[in-house]
Image (cartoon, rainbow, N blue to C red; front, side, top):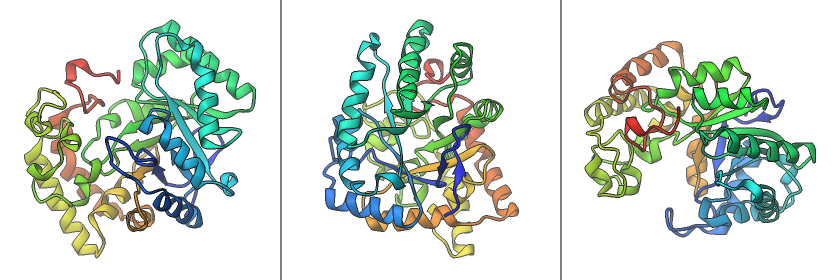
Length: 334
């Protein structure tokens, strides 16, 4: 699998990245076999997929612990991203990072990310200063950010820090970052990693109706707010008719080209300007095998244009707010 350079970091990464949120199991995803994690990580590396996305909050640290076990003996083949949530008092930043290193069973991570931004300038500066200290100590190769909008990226630049990547919600049905965020990332030498790359399974065609989507996965603005059964209140009616129409077009393209819808969705995203890699969850070898096909699917210009046009009504309906969980007037990505 051909590698791409992650922004201005010089780090070569695969276009498909393994999302490690399910690793270690937990309340959100349920039980996850370490045997399956080991198999997924090793098969990924065998197929030149080297990027693994983790975070300290994923399953209360068990995700990092599980990834560390799976990478034993092969750490030098992997690029590890881990993330921290900013807390009001960042005096524990380095201690928390050291705990992540211990769980991951490594001496360094390739990219250390701020998981969600803060609009508190002083707090942002303190956090980034500590991250830079970790870079200077050789424990982090590069700094990254996640869910940062234009104003928040501008703050990072004004504070004198450099990020190599911005990790954001993006797929063919979630295109808000195309408006201003991707262009700014490109202007400042940042790669873009996409999460919710398959809209948590909806863009694979696995659900027969929106009513079949589990409430946890139906909490996004794409769906009527009733779908989340009170778990999340984005206050909107969704874009279900528009999404249904897009799924029909995706299904038609998949059948015409004798591939899966998943391959079409990932193939489209990886063709878009500014996108470095798409993060996908893989709980077993079957899921990994499907995702690998998506990473190698070559899409022609005409098909790409057709799909972009088919997704435009969703883009117009949901707007340019890149936070798909909260009401537009409470957007956290600004």
